[in-house]
Length: 137
Image (cartoon, rainbow, N blue to C red; front, top):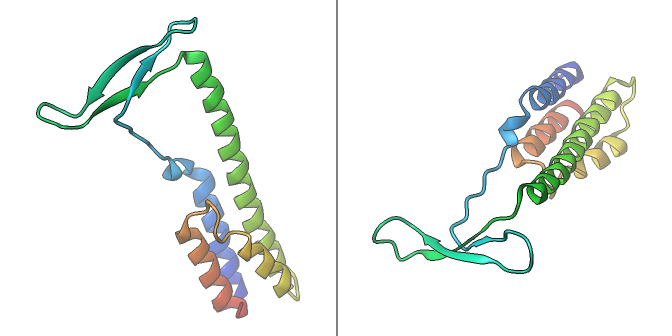
């Protein structure tokens, strides 16, 4: 694989992440406790569970909207920071590949920084394969 092809693939990967960030959307559904607080120190706990005949029972936890919004804002900010770091790492790899003599040690360090993190394995695999085939990393 030519380096120009590797650059094109990595730039396309970044573009796909930027244009469709919802591909990483995670939904969590929990059957458990339902705890409702209407202010003060008391809680209303309601048992909940599966459908009719189900042996699943527990409680569902809920809080007021302001606490949820604070958590969502912090969560979105953290996720955006992680996405920006991923995009920047791939851009740095591309920048190195565009150099007349790409520095394999820098590229390797950047690639290794993606491993064993939140980054989906498919992205790490694509980046690794492109680097292996283009510069023998």
